Length: 111
Ligand SMILES: [Zn+2]
Image 1 (cartoon, rainbow, N blue to C red):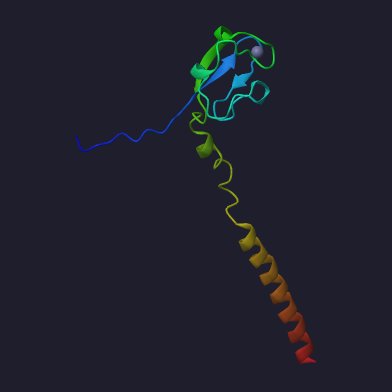
Image 2: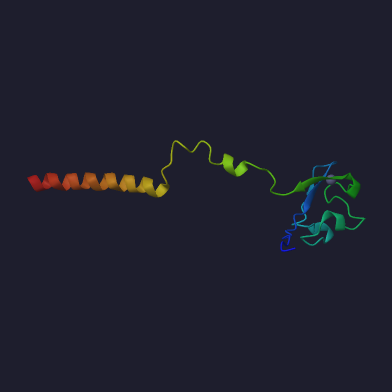
């Protein structure tokens, strides 16, 4: 066996069905001295929802964070019309100003 599975600990989040509180393993639970990185399964049995004190049984697995797919792609939508970066816009503005200035100077030069 040459392949070694790289295990990236993706911890499931759990949502309180009573109040909507989401236990995020990456953050832990400050109010109960739960250190960040503690999986929901390893929470003490007497752990309660910090918001509504519901029991662990009231929580439901909603999967790991960052699973909302397509969001990043959607960010690109609607920007097709205006593809100029701020730097490019500045260049346009300063370019126009410089041209106007040169034109102004040239008028003086003619007199
Ligand atoms: Zn709750």
